[in-house]
Length: 315
Image (cartoon, rainbow, N blue to C red; front, side):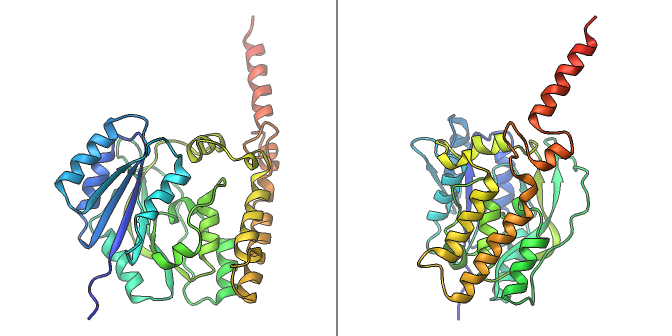
């Protein structure tokens, strides 16, 4: 008889000390015990590593690695995955969130009972830095159960939201490995999940099992700083075009992309991605995107508004 499924949790650590102990305590308190926690430290200070090593010495399920030089978020997430070669399932976990004790049990059960599911994730609650609940709009649940390959790809392209939360779900490791994990692009979580939907279903667990701590607002500039140490040259190009090209190459054009049906679905996903994010061409640049222009939030518009306010306040 097959034993309990093995799980690897990968924690990419970067300069977090305020909430790291709370995160580690909640992970090690999981009711599902058959897992190992891999911490890969990309910090520029010593204190996060000292905290992590203390946990590694106290619990044999915890393994700690420190990068010799900073790699950036994309490469550090890939390093976490590289240590999960022999597990059945894998999940990335953050260094500042909190998980309920039944989080991992619920996700493992979903994958064990549903061989067609390649990613499962729970509902979440957002909290502020002080632990208080963050007021937010109701998040519509999203699953692809029972959909065929084409309808599943269409659903993920059109209807999926909150890719940055879904990416913290539990993966069937063999399917995740087939996607190439994180690509060196902006919004790598979106690209990963669009590639992953070619391999199986996504299922959301109907329970709030994850407290996601909100520490900063999203910005393209902050993502560029955190994702890469040395920025690739193509970051200067419009990111929707770059990402659509990456999707087309990896899912349809490269020699090992798969059969004709998978290649056709891959091309469809690339085209739909380009169409869905067309309004964001130029986002993060000085020119701004169409949506930023329409809302008066392009960087040059904000600069003009700031100058106008300064002039209006002068005597």
